[in-house]
Length: 198
Image (cartoon, rainbow, N blue to C red; front, side, top):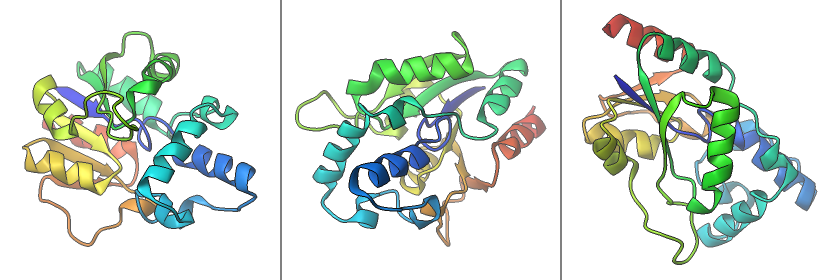
């Protein structure tokens, strides 16, 4: 089985580092539990384009370089690998951080654990390359299961026939989910659910 993994919020504990950077630069005191939307600019104000510009500055910060894996993610990937599953990273990150994304994954998850790392470039500026949807990537790459933290991408992929696990976070609370989306509190639940399918 080919498992697709979102990067930010699933493999990389990005939100905490983004907030640390925001708090350091602007003297604010935002906390993870305050992030109730995937669109972080709704927390601190401004436009989508201003948020994208902010993120591009963040990619040059020490906070970005200090990002660590999400709790339980390394163990989940390792265990699923030992059971014969293949892994592909499917992220909305912009192409300008392709190398640092690959470096992060190789450092924390192993040199050859992820067969492919695909950035959909949805959070890019200007004419910085083609954008793709995660559903299109999952179809093209033969992804059977996606692990995601954003409701929008989870539902998009579920509608395209990809079984999706939604890692529970403050920003993805939704009363109703597509029938193809299963909410999990911890990545261990993904391992358990996929183990039952074998």
